[in-house]
Image 1 (tube, protein in one colour):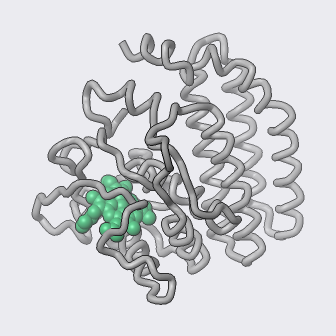
Image 2 (cartoon, rainbow, N blue to C red):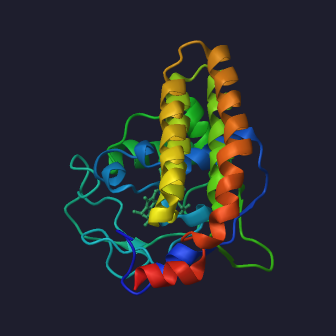
Length: 274
Ligand code: HEC
């Protein structure tokens, strides 16, 4: 809600551009997980909880994006703004419409040129003041951006618990992929991706009656944090698989069973926003 045009909260929190990908291999899924993780971006963006996906929802655009000092009209942003990066702020306020990454843009997507990787690297480090991404992270992000497609027939979709559960699966694929590539920072960021999604679920189970579920979400997140500290890659992957099994057979079905009473239900969400 922090970056949403007043009056558009319900539309943004209950709907989204439909999500379609040309391929969904492990690299693309790892990239999608990082794309939704605020700590990929540094400084103010990370602090505000903003990720690539806040502006490019499902790799598309966000017509409701509005952040004071960054946007002019809803759906616009100035990514060279000093709000994001003191180093790079160009002292000019020049917001432009957030582009839909499924459409051809000014950045060449041809993998041979690596122009997309260079652009994303600059975006993270120069515009958002984030830490230098590893080659594996950049490969994953670029693979995801290249895979984003418009959906045939269906422009929008409802937001559901299943979005977060799928994003947690993506994060787990990211942990495995980065671990196999020997990329410790990529593993750490993929764990952060999973924990961020658990936090998004907790926000939807806000009612007092869900205290037990929120406690379980927090415990699951803390266990993930500890898993991220395991130095041995093989052990880390085995313990993560155990975490995933417990989550898929314990907390996930419980959350599914209660989703109709959570803020994933548009009517309840509408009432909560009033
Ligand atoms: C604050 C909103 C915002 C965030 C966050 C954001 N973008 Fe963008 N993105 C934009 C805007 C606005 C443009 C258009 C910039 C321009 O035309 O100069 C853009 C352009 C792009 C393009 C170029 C599209 C083309 O024309 O070919 C890519 C690729 C892209 N973003 C990927 C990303 C990735 C990856 C991240 C996260 C690391 C990200 N964006 C984060 C707003 C955002």
